[in-house]
Length: 285
Image (cartoon, rainbow, N blue to C red; front, side, top):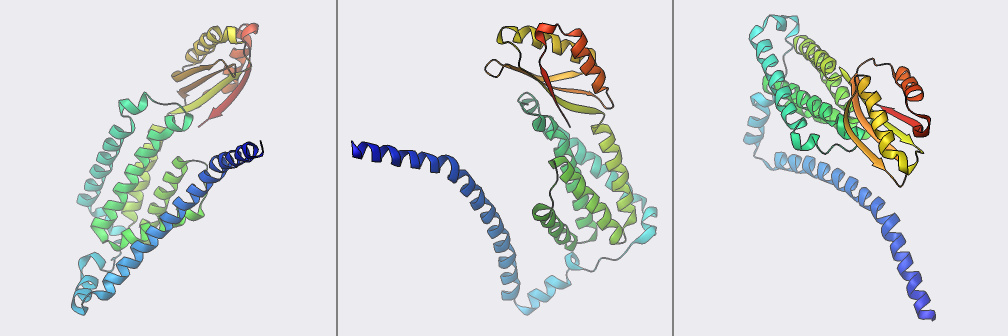
């Protein structure tokens, strides 16, 4: 009897450790591994540089990749060839990023509000990558190391509510870097392109609506009633689900920017039959 009790306690302890301790430890190990790999990469690069022959090291430091960036200044606005090339690169990056972001297989598996907003993040990072590429190709690889340092600072020292905000923060940092390096034409071009891109991507607002405490027998009827009002208010439903256990219906939908949320709430109160009423919970991105 004592051995069975001890075995049960031991199994309970093991289960508790697996459930509570392992995930946290695993995450910590991943973070430590990430930092270790970063430091190892920097250290190995330094060792290779030190072990290189003096002639090779001098050739490397004297190469065009490590040349001092010459400030173009306001004369850069007259470089129409570069400006035209940059616009084409940014447009191409946006288009290719959109193909991946709005892949049909991905769109069909949207289950959360963050997943519905993910395409905007992918497109933003595609543009960020294009801007970095323009700066590195045009003005040397040293700019890439600067951007790498800025990215590390954002990764470990900046807390933002969403990944979309992080993408915009990096884009703004690149704009400031362009101005600081004496490349105002690239900064202005990136600002204009980013402004138009954000304007187009934010034409609609993504919302999640949860209606709780609805009778299980009325879930299907309530779901149809709330969906009809959402679509009547120019909303486009992306995902709809019903949870009989929690007595909840959920909608993820897009509406035009500037929609009147209070008007939609009034429609729920006035137009939905009383027996189908529930507690409405909003989340808007």
